[in-house]
Image (tube, rainbow, N blue to C red; front, top):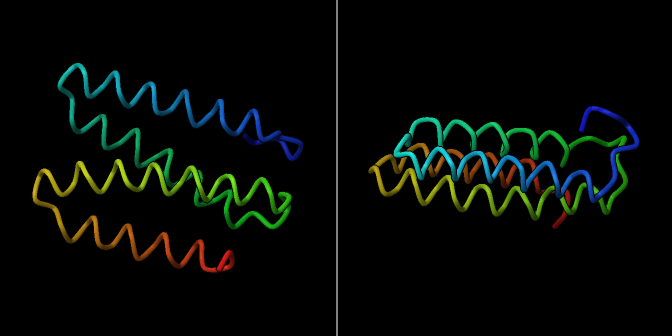
Length: 101
């Protein structure tokens, strides 16, 4: 992900690997690590959305993947009653993804 020539396949593999790690945390009952792993993935995807050195298609794919990670994050946060954090994450996503719309 740190290389300028990172491909769409590498972006998707990065996303899948991070999701797999998060799900392992969840399966082991470690909700904090699950949220942390999802949060790190989501933050990195937001960085890629705004990385103007990436091609538009790459940034759009990062946005789609970030929406998915946001959905998982918000679901978990709402299950634990942390509505404020979920709302803040959604607002932040809209700010980062506004260029698409």
